[in-house]
Length: 480
Image (cartoon, rainbow, N blue to C red; front, top):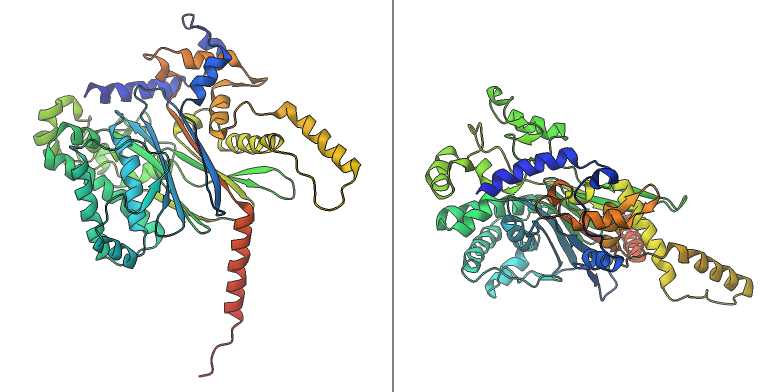
């Protein structure tokens, strides 16, 4: 359990030295210079692209991950919802070990896919003998839980949907909040009931999450912790990109969140609850899954946790738990034709790039990729002058040809290598060559998912919705 203490110490140092110049990096002992080929191999190792086979709200998504920790503590999952047209995905940033993030990334989507299903459909599926995987189809998930743990998780899920089936339907935002909190409670119940080091490790390590749920034009973003989500909006008048943040990070920079925590505890603890920008001077995110050493009663910690892991598992000034919650904030957004893409990412990306920079980079990437597509002539009679102009535009665009086809990789490359003069290969090489024992002082795990929307389909649905609303409002009331 020393890793919990080391994680907190490393995190504090990393947050204070992240802003450094390339010259500062070169003060390190000489590191091997990677070739462009080796850099590309490292950056593209975990790329994944999925193109949807039907004409819907989403055209495709691209995702990638670059680890700093070994093993990487970030996770990501994407899935289509079954029994209705919908999509769900999430980015999960673990800490104190990878266990909690890996478990939550798989289980949370299962809980939400069942919770947001109409209750009648849920009951029908239960009669047919459904499992936790009956409500969604994952697109990039080739790993399952170990056989000894799988029945424990499945039993918790069955109990969850049994309770759901007897409850009234909530709105989507409430169902998301309920699923987050119920899964977090199940992590604790499973750890205490089994007293197994594996389930206990999941409950004691932690993870923050940013989850996207999309049905029709209704986009919901539920987040707990410090991952981020930003929408890329294109202004049709100026052809400029604009970022729209869809979540607020739960950390010490969020004064409303700090005040919420302080109000939940006695005034005598105001000086000890948050110190050096950290919960109980240790934890940077102020909401998270797991991390039950900041949630369980003192008696539970003393009886079941300390005997297994030692006294150092107890945080300092631990008087009136819980100090932490997994309850998410949920933001709802109705998609419009100008909403072109959504980026969700762990804080490893936001440590280097602002939301505005991310949106502009993805927007430029979209435009530059157009030159790689086959040339299409306008319909009808086309003049030679028009063809010449189109060819000239494509030729000029060759200078903007992207190095990476995957936008998530494009973002990682800029995060590590951007300078005021462009991308510097030697800077990326240094970041990728850093020894394992120091790399976390300079960069965190980075996980990114970029979702591309189908503007034409969104516009069509939007017009259809407006027409229906107009028709309903113009229908005369029946005479009394």
